[in-house]
Each structure stands twice: as C-alpha cells, then as structure tokens.
Image (cartoon, rainbow, N blue to C red; front, side, top):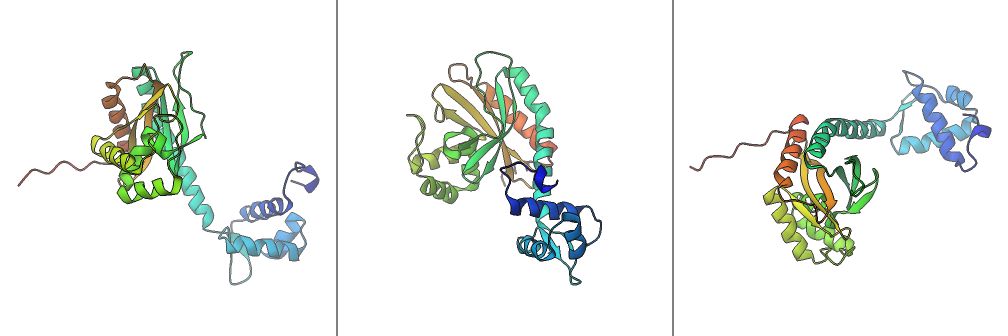
Length: 261
C-alpha cells in the first residue's frame, strides 16, 4: 500500500514495519536490507532501524550474513490462531446440538488473564434470549465458566485473583468475598460444573463446564445462558456431556477411576 493510500489515522512507523514484514514474507529465503528498502521505498537507514526493533521483539531474525527472515514470534501467534480456529470448528456442532435440545444460548469462552472472552455462540430463535457478543469480556468471578477455571487453577491462583481484582460487584449477588469464592471454585471443580446466579447481570443465569485439550489442560469453557426463571438444573448433565465430547475430539481422555486396593 502506498503511503498516500493509507487511512488518515494510520501510524507511520507501524505502517512501515508492516510493509517490511510483508516484503520479507514474499521471499522463501532470507532477504537483504537493500532489497527490502527498495521494495518498501524506505531509506536503508530507516529500514534498518525498524528491522532492528522487529529483531529485538523476535518478529524478524537477522542472519549472520545480514539478511532478514520472519521470526519465531509469528509461529507462536499462528499456533494460537490455529488453536482457536480448531477449537471453534470442533465445538460448533456440539453447541448447535445442545441449543437444539435446550433452546437457550450456548457460549464458548476462553480465558485471557483475569477475564473470559466469548469466542463463539449458538443463539436460539426467540425474542427473549441472553446474547453475548463475540469478543466481549467478563471477569472470572462473575461467570460460571470463570469460577470453574479459577478452581481448576488451584486455591493459590483463586486467592491471587481475588487480591489482584478486589472482586468488584456487578450485581447484589456477585461474590466479593475471597474465601467464599475459593469455596465455590473448589466445589465447582469437584462437581464438574458451576453456576452464575445473576452475578454478572440481574435476571440472567448460566451453567458452565470446562473443555480440555489432549494434555488435559482446561483451554475453554462451554456454558448455557438463559433468563434466570427459565434456567433448569436438568441441563447440567447435557452441558457436561457436550463439554466432554468437545474435549474428546480435541484429544482429551479422562483417566478411568482406580479400584480401591
């Protein structure tokens, strides 16, 4: 993209870095500074300074001969994007199946820091429904999935989360006591599911369960959201079974219980 074709709000150094990365990506082998400067229209000294910063952050590797190629950080991000795409593709049929059975919103979330992010959803065809936008976020302690994620991470992580965040209240029902959160999170892990009882939003209730990958790591949460008066306890085994099937398709195999000696 030529400079005069860029949006007026663009940031010049980011635009130039993007141009350099695009130029490097066009080659199957390492490429010289001279070629990169010519392809991007940048002065060699300008291109060199930007490339040096990209090298420092592992976006670019500078070989012994002074040529450049894409760096290992792109592999990390590519793996994350691929994992998210695979997760959504695997989960979607089970989400649709669960939606067809219970007739309420089904959500897929992943943890990022102290929040869950909604990455996929299956919506019922009804006027009164709970709807979370894909990409929206919520604190761990106010969501069903977030509480079981905290429990799975262990008591130290749960209490550390409480200290970091201060457990802000979003409704009168939000859990804002660390010891109570710890008890609820540990119980959720034992039960294999958790509830949100109008803790994030008044009038909304959720049920959540974990999705695990082949290593047994909890990588996502599956949840059902509905107006609190429509939520039913009999959905729990249906939700848990759907989460297990998604996990199994991602390579997870639960250990069989051992017999007592």
